[in-house]
Amino acid sequence: MKYFLLLTEHPYGNETTRSALRTARRLSSDPQAQVGLFLMADAVYCAHTGKEYAEGSYGELEAQRYSAPQFIEILLQRAEIYACGTCLGERDLSLDDMLEGVEKGTMDLLHESLAAADKVLTF
Image (cartoon, rainbow, N blue to C red; front, side):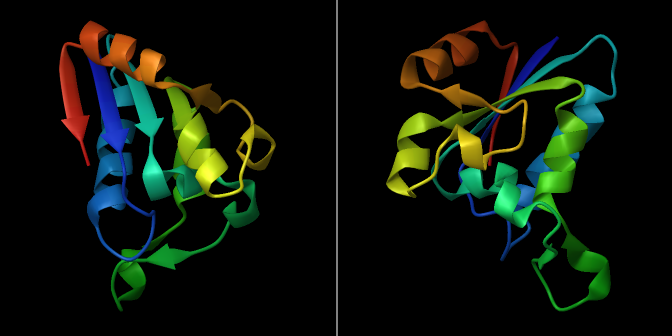
């Protein structure tokens, strides 16, 4: 089964992106699954090296703290991860600012990935 996740929210401040990353991690643990992620808008910060071990949170409780780049590093072992090139540029970022293994995404690639997926999840 091919899963494709489209993330658009900033990695910190609410539960949405953390939920997406947890879902992707669980899906990618299935050896039969193919998982792809496309980071758009502020979600590109999930893979930003400058925040590699930053602790973000979506609430006041310590249990609600996590590091989005650490999730991405784990996911890169089993998933294809793309950061939108336009979204990177709008934030004055480039692939050099992203974790190794994250690829530049385009709207054509997004279209192809969405069309090829058996299941699409948006966050």
